[in-house]
Amino acid sequence: MIKFFVKEAVNLNEKMRGLIGKEQPSAILIKTHYGIHTFGVKFPIDVLILNNENKVVSMKKNLKPNRIFLWNPMHEKVLELPAGTIEKEQIKINIPIDISIL
Image 1: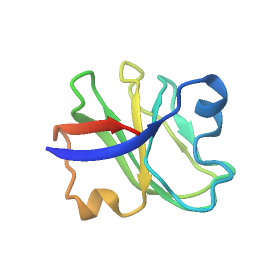
Image 2: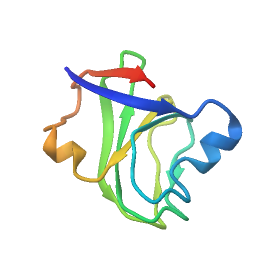
Image 3: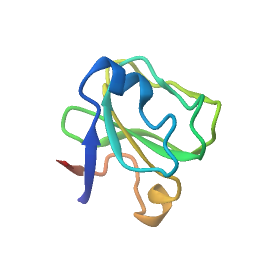
């Protein structure tokens, strides 16, 4: 199991902004069914989509700025991470993720 310490986007404004305007990537948890975009994000990110048991069901390495990422809308937990995290942590589909909210 891999553990991440993350900030959670809890209101609509935080969910819409995510990492937009930030100078450096950080780990953030967003709950949404519809997908994410990186318009206005200054750096690439890694993205994990988790099921209700916090197991990885989809992922995207190195999602560049000005892109869109969509997944099966039955899943709502999205972890946005610094680019390279998936490779560094050797994350695979079905691996459980332990999330601690900061």
